[in-house]
Length: 256
Image (cartoon, rainbow, N blue to C red; front, side):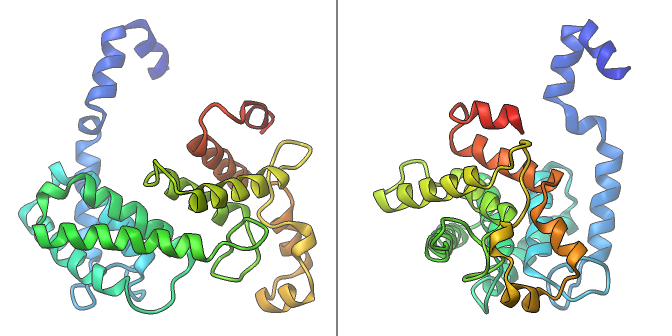
């Protein structure tokens, strides 16, 4: 009903698109306050739930959100943002990470770079170095079949491969021959994984061997859900193909 009313007025559509955040100012402020209260000021970050240990991925997601809503941040929240970014930058250089961690790290680094005027010159150099490090991880952890798994060496999955392609598309605009070849190989794998009905499963059925079954410890029914087409994997694959070449995969996207 709201959309129908907006369509009646061109002006209404323009106002909504220009100032859509202000429509939900109250809800955004309440959400930011909740996140502020959930902040772990000892370990400098957030877990997936209050009381759960701080995680790189969750902290990345919330830094991204804070920066995206920076015009609504209070002085206290701005101080938390600057404090947590410094601790987060130290944390992302320590220990092994999953592909999804690097995806969110890179997306968040790019969001910081888009608002870099808020931060010091020293931080700018760090951000650029970490962006290069994330890309280095992606290009060195690609599987021989062209996809990416949960971590380096793991079975390729549609969702993780799509995430990497989406992230790369936002930062690599003039790829080297090596980068171009890696992306083409990944896209080829992704296209091969599309089901005849148009959807994507998360894992190729042929990759589910005894070693894989032992490692992830899922029931047969749960395994079946991994390789049968599902909305989440399909949506990620579509987004990745659109991000890499917006007009190149029309038939595959229409089928999906």
